[in-house]
Image 1 (cartoon, rainbow, N blue to C red):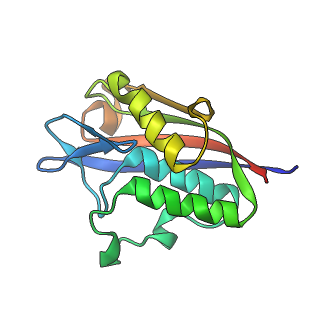
Image 2: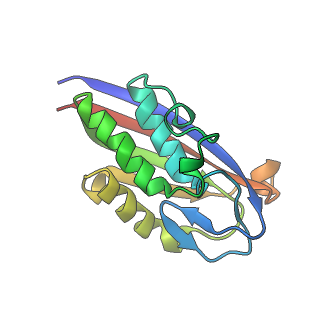
Image 3: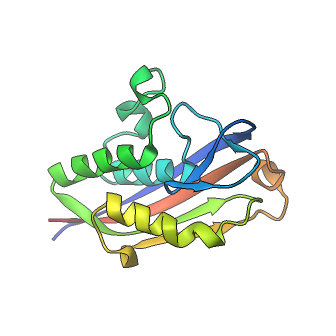
Length: 159
């Protein structure tokens, strides 16, 4: 059996008149994330970590923001496509560990639903999915409430 690791990072600006979607969960909040798709910063970091583990580029290569097909796209559906590609290359998820950096809103009530959505998309047990949220103590662009970011590390194992 062989193993590959990957790291992903994504960032989006908060803006009015957009839904806040994280981990495929629609979270009630006064602002949402700006982007070409649904701007799910968590799922984007996860996709980049999966693609990076196998040196397959990033989500911009696979789902360019210049392609109208992906305007408003559901990032969980894009995650399913990334995972199909990972499986075609002979790998499956071992586990993933992700963190969302956001000052507001409080995300802990939504974490389990995020984990369920991600586990379903990646065809794995929820115990293989770790999602955490943290503030940045009001420092930087996330601490000032201007945006959100996410990091993800994954371990892939050969099938």
